[in-house]
Image 1 (cartoon, rainbow, N blue to C red):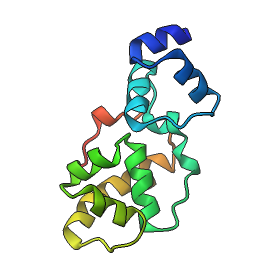
Image 2 (tube, rainbow, N blue to C red; image 1 turned 60 degrees about the horizontal axis):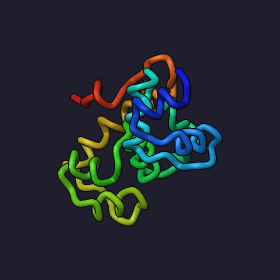
Image 3 (cartoon, helix red, strand yellow; image 1 turned 90 degrees about the vertical axis):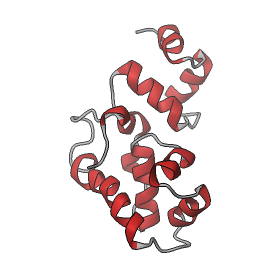
Length: 132
């Protein structure tokens, strides 16, 4: 598939794709999802999120959110919380209450199960995954 074909299929311009490919541009989660669907690889594969730090719960939350290709707004809506609350959790400014912690742990579980063990073999796509 040529660059122009990928651009046409994703709605992204060729310059954006070229800069992203050269690692000179940070690609947004929605654009990663579009590229993921067109190229047939996971969002995690495209984003190279395995290199992200994960020493705190907040860093785990950020990594899980990006692993699935969610923006802060989308992930907050999915968790039924405000973007501000998500921001405070991601930067360890507030401790998670018990109820949302159970929901988030479903997303974090996939990191230890699939992403850290064998990230590229599974080809997990955002559209195919919904935690139980």
